[in-house]
Image (cartoon, rainbow, N blue to C red; front, side, top):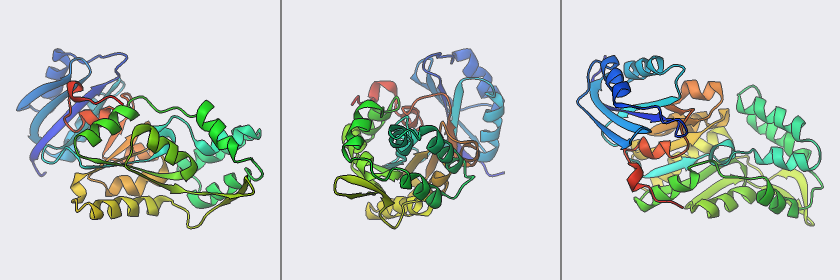
Length: 298
């Protein structure tokens, strides 16, 4: 086993705030001792610094907190604060899948949502599944997008704070989505993201054509976007953070310095460096050592 200086960030469900000094003491014992600890937000988030093997520590804490509303992110201490955040949008920055919400307008919401769920679980290839769903939207008037944005789309808790805080600390925030530019541009403006990349719905005479402009931005394109943006910023890949929930995020999460599965499908949660099942998106700030007092609210 390779030992290095690590940091374990414990993040509790903020609605329950179950962390205590006694619970942290128990965690320190499970890790075989720690060098120091620090509250990032008392009762909600704490850092434990120790020397150990990364894979072993992750396994230890996964077992230690099994069944508890606590997320544990373990990573090398050096370089934990990132300079680039690449975030998925649907079911990550926002609580909805935009294609499902558009389909609901034409009475096909449940049908399309079932296809979306299978694609996000990795049971269907992303590109053909997306084409199949979008084809069902042919003939919808363009102004339906504005209606859906206003009435159906909501940011996930912490999204605004995450983006504003990272930008205030000199990082770049980019949305890279297998969804649609007609939505990502609005969400990017809402949270103050620096850039957004996504697919584009075909439009003719003010109506959706049921097509997508090629090439489709899918799993490999998400990874390439992360690498391209980091290279353009002259950043080492270790300085990047990616977050997503679905199978089409897997390559992007694997390529990032820290890949985080947020409320993710089982396949994605199992593969990612870290998973957030209980905290909100501000957990990504705690993971970088940013305390609650340093948050910048949007």
